[in-house]
Length: 116
Length: 113
Picture 1: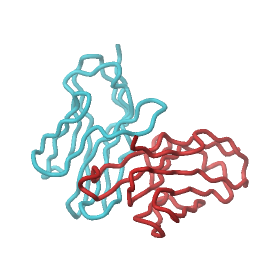
Picture 2: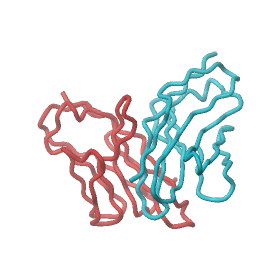
Picture 3: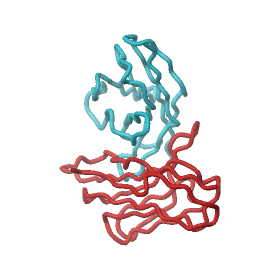
Picture 4: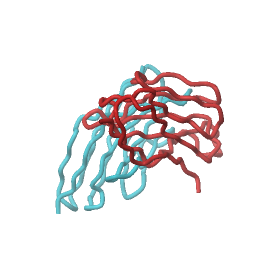
């Protein structure tokens, strides 16, 4: 089944304790992206990657890091989490290849993070 | 730069009534247009998309949207809603070249029995 898998789905942590949210897709998509969803603010892009070793900042990158060492994986790293990073996070992927359902973002199920 | 405005943050509607969720966008280049739906405690899934051709696009669950280039709008409609349509709806645009998507702030549709 074509999917984007995020882990963990739920996490409660404390300020300053480094954490990583993993994201993996099995569709050979070139493009991957992280969003955070907050009430009243909708989806805001954190980072995106056009392909392996190519990443760029989105609208709200402060406090986050990403890496794209392999095509299928795009982990989101919070080096020193703070309470204002409490949010619902989504990973998504897409492709331009016409035979692969181009121009459609496929989302993971979400990761709810609470930073105390 | 692209931007997406969803004019209504919350839309309550009675069951079996029609509904329209409004979306306007601004872009200096040609774009593709999308509506995504997020059911409670779930991720987002594609409802429908406009890439080219007919400006009236039909999606899943009886929803449709009309692309209006002159008004830069892509409003979502359904002639008769069901309780199961209660969800958050997001409008999004993507430049024809490139892979970045831009989302609106969402419209929460609540269907009242």
